[in-house]
Image: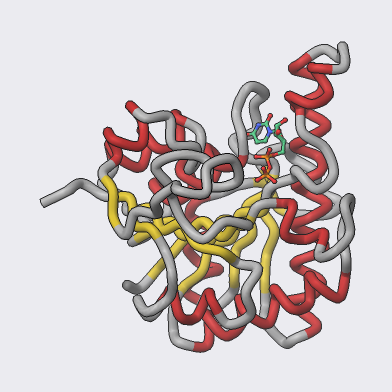
Length: 235
Ligand code: UDP
């Protein structure tokens, strides 16, 4: 692997809090990302916004869905800036590119410019998902992984892989080591939303689901030794 897309759920930026951003925890995450980059990988980063605002939650409380989704997208920009700050304090050069233009704080998404940043050893943090409501940052991650021709999409979240049923509700739930895209889609296995899984399937991008909560796990997973589930076309 030469180039990977790393997607982190917004909720992992909260640390032990139940809302928002814990700067100390963001620094810890940044250390893990730096260690991954130091192995020589080119890294595209996408961070969710669920620690601040999710459109569906706003809509459930009566907000207009599209409006709530735009708020969610803005939340991802705040997370991207927090991660940029943490990475740069560790000496890792980064650029944030947002799908919603905000030229006072970051660049717009320009694929060729992103390529150049990666060539120069910068991490590119893609913010604001696909820039449209009714999507999630998982879809944004799949889209950027495809257009940046990443070798794999690593999804760091609070569970350690894909299970055949919800492990929080069913203690017998079994974790897959590998599973194919269609099983994930047909079983609605909650790895990522369906549009993100389908985009990865159609572009043959493996999805690696792992827990980012355990320290050192990202490096292990990147070297193929960590606990993870790989979603890919079965041979
Ligand atoms: N969002 C959106 N379009 C996108 C990406 C994100 O509308 O392309 C909104 C949506 O409301 C979503 C919120 O931003 O709930 C935060 O993103 P997400 O839920 O994917 O964050 P995560 O679960 O990864 O923390």
